[in-house]
Length: 101
Image 1 (tube, rainbow, N blue to C red):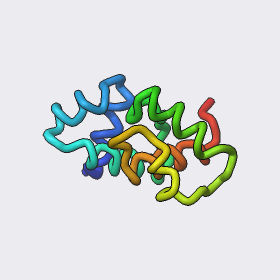
Image 2 (image 1 turned 45 degrees about the vertical axis):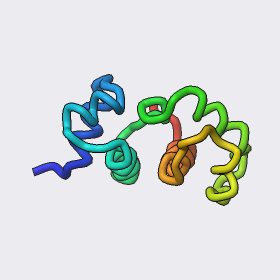
Image 3 (image 1 turned 120 degrees about the vertical axis):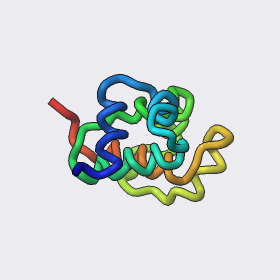
């Protein structure tokens, strides 16, 4: 039987938003972010915009710069309110993966 994060990834990869995925699966946002990070660890393709909004992605691109593994906690103060450590970690993990295709 596939792990729980597989089913979250399947919904996200099928085009459901993170919010829709949470509603369908009955899980909270932080679990979705965790499942997305686990899917990346498994090598399954994911895009930051499947989890993060454009405002957060733009802010992360601006504050993280080109550094491969920046310290996350100092970045949080420069990001939109409500952005979590795990979301930053997910974004950085996405950025380190080679592009699909």
